[in-house]
Length: 249
Image 1 (cartoon, rainbow, N blue to C red):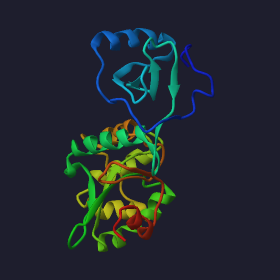
Image 2: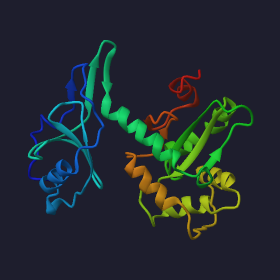
Image 3: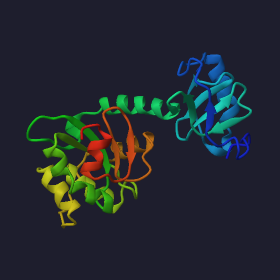
């Protein structure tokens, strides 16, 4: 850990009032360089990616390239790990998560749908969800059994690969075999049904890149469902529950 770590109390989420400072604006190069000099402590290997204003005056939002999002003092001598919540008349709003939602929308928009394995409705498409999946994951297998019902209700399911054991693992090779198959949908279904599929790890498959993207987007387990608004739903939801989440029930 960095030497300039706050106490455990400061590591908790920060709660603020309903009047927010302008947030999400890049700071000057001089300010960003000052924070890099303070926060990039050699032993940690952490590198500052971006520095922006936050909702709280005197704190900058700092995203490490290979680490967490933190809120740092302008000098970089103290920081907080956690989310900032806004307190409004209707309740609490996780402002950090709302910003991450927007980032996820941008990240998914940059992907080529042809690099996904997509199960589309036969009729009108009402919504789509993007699911980071691992074929060896029990709840991924369970979610896949809900795909026909989701399709029936107009929800498109777009799969991205997330081998939990990492690149080069058996899970990676299974996922790559689905992405490299002539019939990707049938191969994915077979793997989710625990059927044996010939290994076929083709050159240029997108599994490693999708795994890295999942890490950047905050995936910590599978399935991880991302809605069109960028909301991440960690874990399994039935078709009925997911329709409620999507506001389509």
